Length: 214
Image (cartoon, rainbow, N blue to C red; front, side, top):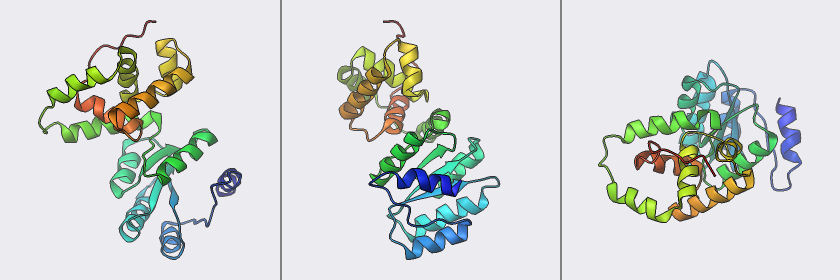
């Protein structure tokens, strides 16, 4: 798999594979001696070695970004990696273009979560935030900022649906969905769809009925 990833990434002009590691300790040692922007960390089961490595890297190289890549989407692996400091979590069967996009987003300080786990992560974060003071004014403001169709897209993003799945649900093109997501991010001042989803959960937008008809 390492060679396959190297081949894919080396084809991109703005990406360079500086080094590879086969153990957590080796990864930590490399991060201490190389000038890196992003670490692509393989999270396996049991996840202890890779999770330990993520934690050490983030402790020792606080500005270094870590994108977890795994064949597992269970809560144990996902939340262990995120708690250790991973800046995102992607699955190994993701298309290569999604992986490349996730690396670039991570480099820029954003967060990428595989659609299969995004809803669970947001629900977990919402549980952590449930004791915070409710924000009815923010919710009212949100309705004024976004169009009805953007609100529909927002609800579906918060449920963890991909752009393709949202397009199918709303009977629109995938390009239209991408435009709506970009507009939502701009209006809410959000970096990525994860922040958008958290916004929806905090303002109880998810519980409202989405209009899935044209």
